[in-house]
Image (cartoon, rainbow, N blue to C red; front, top):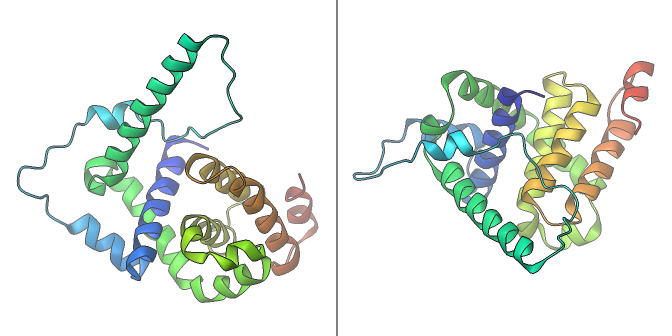
Length: 205
C-alpha cells in the first residue's frame, strides 16, 4: 500500500461515515463537501497534513517502564488525536490532492452502486450484538462496505482489501472491531463471492 491508497481509503471512510449519519447518498455527500466554500475566517494549518500519517494504524498495547514515559506517550497521543481531528474535519480539497479525490469519488461510486446488495450480506455475517446496536456500529459497517466494494467492483485482491479494512478498524474503531471485521470479510469472500483457486488461496490467513 502506498500513501495514495491510504489517503483514498481514509477519505472514503470519512465521507461514508458522515453520509450515513446524515442519511445521505455517499457520492452526493462527497460532491457537496468537495464543492463547499470555506467558512469566513476559517484557517487551516497545513502543517497538520504534513505531520499526519495516513498509513498508520493502532497496533497492540504499548508497554512503558516509568510514569514519565507513560505521561510522554499520553501527551503525544493527545497531540496526534487533535491533529487527526483537524485533518479529518477540514474541507477535503485542503487535505487531499485532485488525484486522490478522483480516486476516492470513483471508489464511493462503487460503494453506492453495491450498497443495497452488500447490506443484505452484511446483515447475514455480522455478529448479533452489532445488529442490536447498528447506530453505534456505523463506522464499522462503512468499513465493511468499502472493503466489499473494493473486492467486487474495483478488483482489489481479497487479502489487500481485508488487511486495509482491518487497519482502518484498528485506527478508528474499538478493540474488538478489527477481529470482527476480519472474520466478516473472510466469510464474505468464502461464502458470497465466486472464487477461483488463486483467489481462494489468497484469502486464507
